[in-house]
Length: 487
Image (cartoon, rainbow, N blue to C red; front, side, top):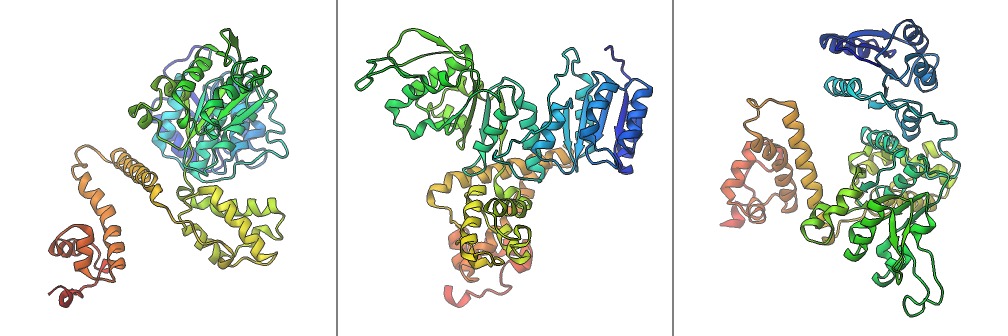
């Protein structure tokens, strides 16, 4: 389809403010914008003239956007479709992408983000035909469900839906317990390989001497005890997908063989010289920073590039606290607990949402299971839950990574929200945003003793006094409670 600089864009949403926002935004960019408040009205307008881009809400009065999507696709031909939703989950994202949508916006969104998505959709090539999929029974019975309605998880669902049908390798990153195994299984389950084998393994759980044999197989007599030839996981999974967990700890020699599988689709069994072909999609996961591994010479840079053709980063639970009630109810329903939706009172849930959950969703699930045993069918009390995990000294590196991630995200947000002329005090802003919490906690630890607090902070007591005056006076005592102690 030949496109001109001016496009006709149809926005279907029952919220007038959304339609008005798109109309103003896209009209100012020179486009012709049509709006509709229902799927039925939108289909009438789509049938009346050529549509170059459809922006479609999921929740609509009457027929919803997902069920109407096939008819919209028929009406607008190969024009791209952007789905909007404030209630996204993995099934919605997959249904949208499989139904012919090109991208996915989660409400609330910034108009500049919507503009960028729309422009990208208008520019993308429409030469390839959109494949058709059966959207029924997208989540098989018994399949592990990824639970979440937060904006962070909706972005994860979007990426799963977009990548599932490709043949690209996927690298899933995130802290321990965030659900990397569930995401890998979901990618396979919604891919074209879903009817073929899915093999999941954490190679580092095996001794280094048998990792290659397990992955690539061995021939008879390859080593002591190899009485018979044995197929490896890549040969067994031929045509399907292989999930390699904790990929960052894979020995360097095995990394070389894995790279050959990804690049050339072939491997060599232990003790054999003959190369064997295999058609396998590789999905890998790690809680480590693989770029640091490249710098430390413990991970191959070329393998990192091949594995991360598509990267999906899972948010820690502390960044999606709004999902905790939903997760708790999900776990309780799986346990068959009575009145799962109301079993945890609001005040108890509030306490749970304030915990750090260093073990993420896995720790929360274990806590709910523990509490269900203690409560034995009654309404939960806070004492039914185990004492929260404390981060050990071994978690210092992970804590540092969290701090680094926060600083990076904060800085990017400041840069995107301001202008170069207004951003001449970023360092002071960061100090003002973080130092009050540091001072408050240290003063609480010392019982308000400023001399002791200054010693812990590594600063002069007068400097600490000036810092306290700079911030909220509630941070510490107004008077020098430690004067008699220090003289």
